[in-house]
Length: 217
Image (cartoon, rainbow, N blue to C red; front, side, top):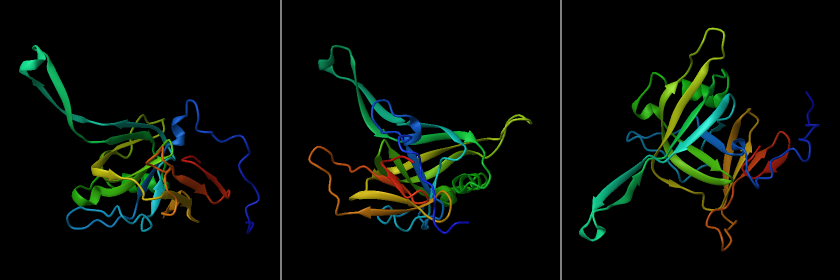
């Protein structure tokens, strides 16, 4: 194998992120070596300690949901009509596709099929159209395999966010390590949002091709 990578992605083949973006520009990274304390808590303040596996291989559908809790009340000044207030949310990402054995993210999730409690807790980074969200999470409804005898095995699970999510205090940079689909995380606190935005878009760097893109690969 050559010591230096001799190829790069063809110019013009990346999604520019404008107009109607395709779903593959969104990224999910799962910490596959989380430190979970006895209370089931994980640290969201230090992202550099994570072993972040890109959840993408074999995955063809990701569906976010807010699962809102609402209060419906009728008041005397409402003329008999009811007002609705959203009092809470539980954000979830429903993930499905085909089982890809050897993929670090899939193998980590599939290994949770028989487990429960703190064993199925971790933390995730969800980059949605360039905007990064960091959250504590529980892996639920794990389906590690299944389907017809002559078909690819199915794979699905749900990422249930726990508590209030966070955003990086600066610009998040995810960089591919020497291990395939495993990324390191770093936050450049010197980068500040402009006056029109409160969130700085993340950068995902595929070091194998020495290329960087905003929220895409």
